[in-house]
Length: 162
Image 1: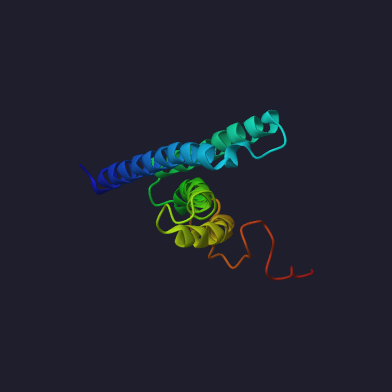
Image 2: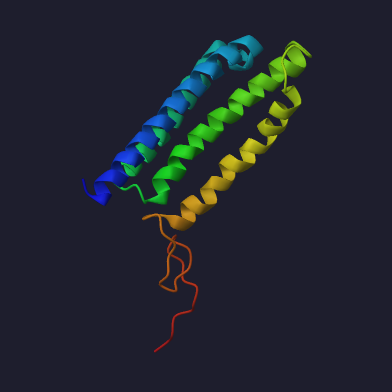
């Protein structure tokens, strides 16, 4: 087995582990969301259903795109970042629901409610901050070294007139 094959196998195992964590967090989120009422806090059942189903579908799609990149190109940072966005997002939902259950619904009934509330507030920063390196490293997961600007196509130096 070559080094590249071993690297791909390790990346595949790590990616499968992250997918398992994602599924487990969604299961916990659904149970906690039902217990706290956060899954049914919209004005109608249709809004609740649309929001909940679309959150599951879109986060799963982002995770699967990241998984596809990681299993084919383990050194591509874009794949790992795409996998972390939905995992951190759902983790934020889970700790938010846990904090609500621990501090509002049953004060003092569950430990670490304040810590969960703190993580709930700061995880949104982490999820949004992941987009910065995602755009800077796009498309191949490596920073540009050709003297150009960000990978969005802008130029850092003005063109010379002829």
